[in-house]
Image 1 (cartoon, rainbow, N blue to C red):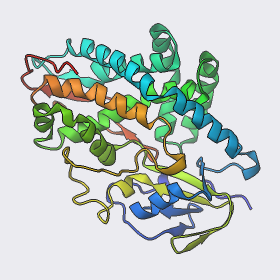
Image 2: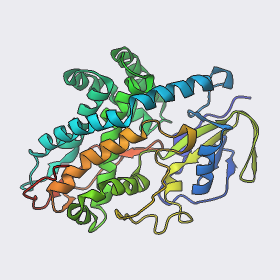
Image 3: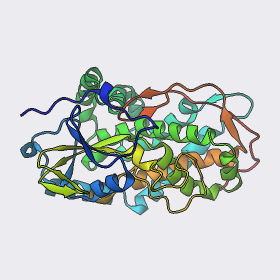
Length: 352
């Protein structure tokens, strides 16, 4: 029997989503997990394999052995040594950009800072010239927009066309660090940063804490990923019958993981909607967990800290200068622009 197609206007993923035990949603044709403990267990469950919105037949999926080999190659390419090299170059680029940002007037932080810094990183990681990266960025935009609202058929068609145009432009490195890696770094990463910075700007006193002690940046990024990380939902497919937290999921059935809800689960986190950049041991699920966690997690964390910390170093405080407008949907929400008014800059930038 053909599974019912998921409709984007049927999916309720607001911040006020209700937490419940695992259950099957007949209208969506999928199991739904929203509690932190359930989503974490699903990430670690070997019987639940990553899937798209409407899972391909199991026989059409990539062999597990090939997936493991691809992940191994990607982890090797993202070694700590390589990340340190990219970190130095990214910090240099970020500090050059931040020289043009002052407290004299509001600045649109995405176009003036986040996007060019992230594009520089995208060019480094995918081994292409920066001018070529600038050319490809526009071509790749439909792919990122479709990921933000994956239930929209029109956006999905535009993404397929864009994929065809850029796929052959990247020929070096592991597959995940080619065209898909470029889209993630050139488009998704600046959107992640904008979401995180908006959350920080909306939390009184938290920017000042980071300016006073910029070494908290790494800890703050983890808390920001918990509160405002990109993924709202992910999907899994049962590759065999499995008993899961009190329910029986049959082979071939689809499972929706509400990652956003899990990261705001009051059963797991104290004051889940309140940002605390001093929080310790933040075990969020924004980058997954277990054997199918985000293979580029180290790269994302390095980039988020490297691009954010110069802002905390330079400016004593910051506030929103204009109202924001959210776009995207069930995949993730994002800000097309973020206008910020910075406070008095410090005389010296931290040399680290």
